[in-house]
Image (cartoon, rainbow, N blue to C red; front, side, top):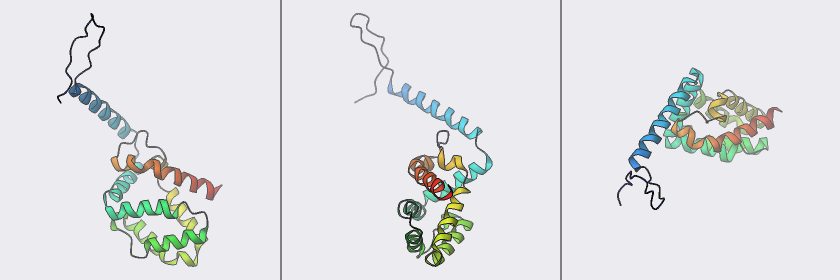
Length: 168
């Protein structure tokens, strides 16, 4: 089946001709590029770095799995003891290097001591999440970083809930 072609409308039948697929694809690509360029102009260095860190993490299978597991199995837990136990279990075999040196060390260390200090563990995780630029986590309307767009809606509702529930 070939692409649609541009044909003049038929005044006798009243049918409108549709633009060719190639034309629609080119117009869509141009619009996406314009949106991407506009979004990049409005991105601070801190937000750009956070987006790169998140993209690196999501590009790594182990990093992506850890991020999804933390979101689904830890951050939604309201009981500090269960929160700490699950964090301990998820980090028991290590933390992927794609997380970055600071977060890797912090998460691995916190995971080891989490069962002994559950309330502090929960506050520490929430503190770290709150340090990530809010636009990167909460608003992807002008961000076209592919992995961020892919997971942002899933993550933002959890992170926004945790921040408001813990600090309010």
